[in-house]
Image (cartoon, rainbow, N blue to C red; front, side, top):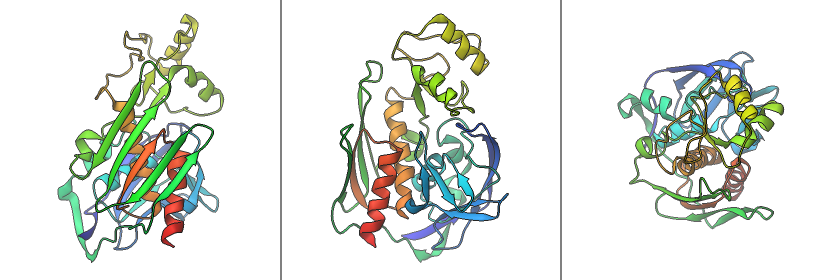
Length: 299
């Protein structure tokens, strides 16, 4: 299989989910064997999308090099991986990737298969010599990566939530990433939003870019406060336990979004991982840890 890059540039702009900072971002072609590289155009610093450059996993994945940081990189990395892009530059003029609609769909709609270009170099899949395993003993979360003939992921989320329940999702090469995974948006719990806001996070959140799960009862005054935050006076809690800001694209959209996230975070291993991934209650810290372990193993 030949390596692929973008046939032209693609522009995106918008607020970052956590910082609220407005940024302009351009995805550009890159030579063979470049991989994915972020470029802070305002600072003139390149940040390769590799696990050793992870600087934060607080509610998203951030990469840093020197004084330059780029946050919430997982969605664009997931899109490029799901679409089969080996090499690309991602130019950005601020410290966080635009959240857009909270999924990878805007990238998918812009970057069609016909817009990709084959390069004169073979794709080098990451082939593991043995199993890689990381866990969080406190939460029971773990990720097991096992050598396999083709890539696949089985993922389970369990937030002890009566709204979400236990969601099990699967991806392999027969699953259409663009239709089944890339469209799924980020999510959070309603009782977390005010806390996250007080911690300086979700400054760029609004009613169009996140699913809000209403797990616990909440007072009317807090609903009114959220309505003011979102500029949405008609917000309410639906009968199935979600804030009435968006309609679900899939009944298990939250589980599918976690699959989207892990595909993006695993790209930090340095390429396409040819293995079976079993993930139980994964998050960005665990995802990026297993990418780092994969890199150590391959070294």
